[in-house]
Length: 95
Length: 151
Image (cartoon, rainbow over all chains, first blue to last red; front, side, top):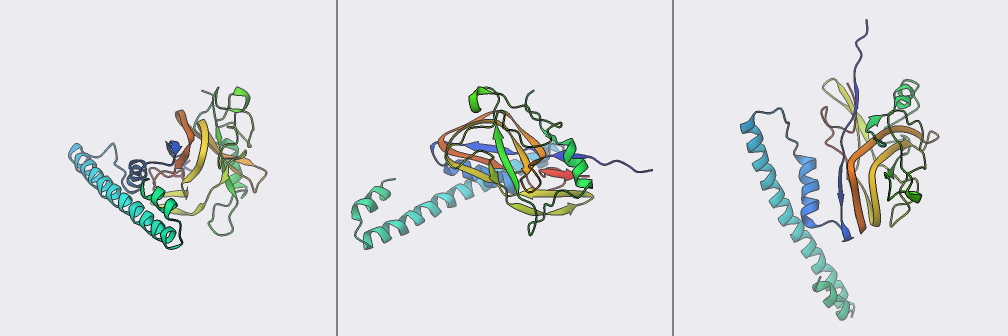
């Protein structure tokens, strides 16, 4: 006799933005959701610790996302300025 | 509910017939199309999607906007694997940019196999981007969460 298995579809997470791309916080949330998943069936104290770790991880990712964007912007500004596009460089600096 | 999350019944049958190939290298072209209920869809038509869906339908698909165009976009496949006794497969997250979209769900289908339906995703509420980014993040690829699991 064969035992029948189950086939299941997982739940996706949808993130949207208005008038521009996703914010740093939204991207940090996406990354954390991909790294950490906490079972509803885990004991309460484990879930609490996992949630604290999740928050810490999100803060670290958020910080480095900001840094990455700032550094990339700095590189773009430098390239624009060295090619004579000072006005455009200043515009990007103010973003 | 007009959009109900489900693995399409015909897909289960077609798996046994060897219709679908999820391998990263040489696999089929799976696409994701977005659908709306009521406003947001083409001509305010409402999508009806669920286990009985057999192929890509156009009724209720969201209109072309930004980087989203009719029929949706191709998904990047991740090689199927086993997690314990569960077989799983995954896709890379998908984003549509500079798009004004309102969607209640999505259909994953196999464009290499006459647009045969794979599964229906229900977002449970309308998700809206306005001249912005619309990102679909797939769940962690494990036995409990992966987008497609066969146990």
